[in-house]
Length: 246
View (cartoon, rainbow, N blue to C red):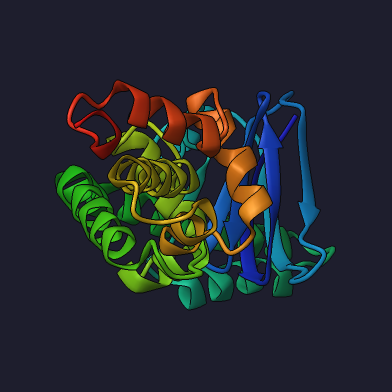
């Protein structure tokens, strides 16, 4: 029956709530309400370290409503990870059995919540414009680099945000995840090359950033309903100006 806030100090992991999954990494805070079923696990390659705090009470609901979390976005990337960690450490260090210890813990908890509330207020006037700019910069990076072996981590680093934050702003502004956008862009570029007819399927795959032809064929078929070989043949048959029909 507590509100829970976790701060990822290093590494990364997965946070699941309400049937949805978020990737979280250093600087991300994730939030759970009382009675919510949640699950969180560390990444196998880069296991995380996190700090957390739980709170309840008569004012808890009112305070939680002013934090930078919603049911649709229970993850927030803090602009001051060191400050947030220090605030949580102050809560931990004040633990004790004396009345003044409890008072100190509550006081530091309020300071931590106040810091989160300031981020909520500071972010509101610029949230839409800043998130749109992140997405535009990410799209530019993808369009210039899709033919290389890039990952979503590379895209996130290029615009200066965490992978989880990039996911959130992409879903908000584009309606799809960054990996879905990258894959869709690569497949659309592959279609252009297949229609041109000057490259083999293996060459097309490499040209759009797929370095395994068989994986490319599976992804292409999933996106277009047919493998690239059939797509190529259909385009050539349908082209009234193709050399075979002149």
